[in-house]
Image (tube, rainbow, N blue to C red; front, top):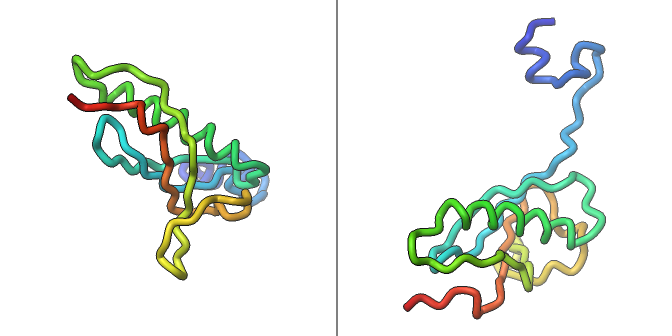
Length: 120
C-alpha cells in the first residue's frame, strides 16, 4: 500500500478494513458580535443526546468568538439556549426534539441568550 492509500483509508486500510467515518458534520449558524457566522461542527456519528450537539457547537463557536473578538468587544462564554434544524421538506426551522434529527449534513441554528451582546 502506498502512503496516500493509508491517508485516504486510515490506518486500517493496510489490513484491508474499510474505514468508517466516526464523525458527522453539521453546519451551524449563529451570531458572533452581531454578525451571522456559519461553521462546520463535527459530532460523533451516533448522537445519543442533543447535549452532545450543543456542547460541540459551544466549543466550536467559543473558539471562533475568541478569534473574531476585536479590541473593546466584551468577552463572553458562548452558550446555546435553543437548537433548531432546517426541515428540508417545509423549508422551516423547527426545534431539535430528538438526536436522530441531527444527521450528517444537517443545517442547524443555535440560539443564544439575548443579553450576551449589546452593541453600543
